[in-house]
Length: 104
Image 1 (spheres, rainbow, N blue to C red):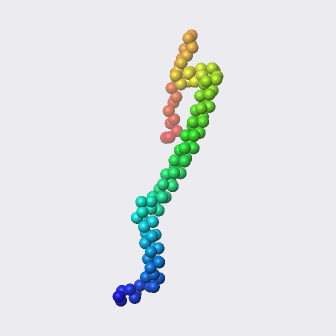
Image 2 (image 1 turned 60 degrees about the vertical axis):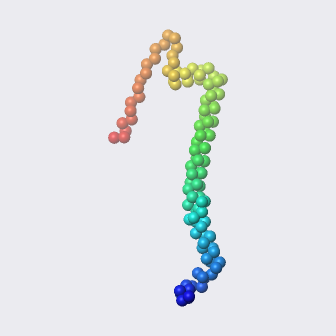
Image 3 (image 1 turned 135 degrees about the vertical axis):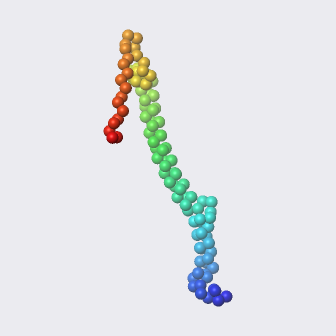
């Protein structure tokens, strides 16, 4: 019992021991410990950013779809650009783009 006399009284307090045990369990040992919660919050922020990005992409695609449904000129432009379609008496010349050499 001499060992217990060298430990300060506030460390021998049963409430302090219970609180310290609780903190250890919550911070390190629990399934939903502190570090897991931090990781999940980071993942949630990333998912919310991707949700925002995809929501704006969906809105843009819907707008383009409505333009394609309602405007024949837009439909023709889309077919020419995306599928390289042409009119009957028309020639089509494809000019390849130069690669960007500004990296050097």
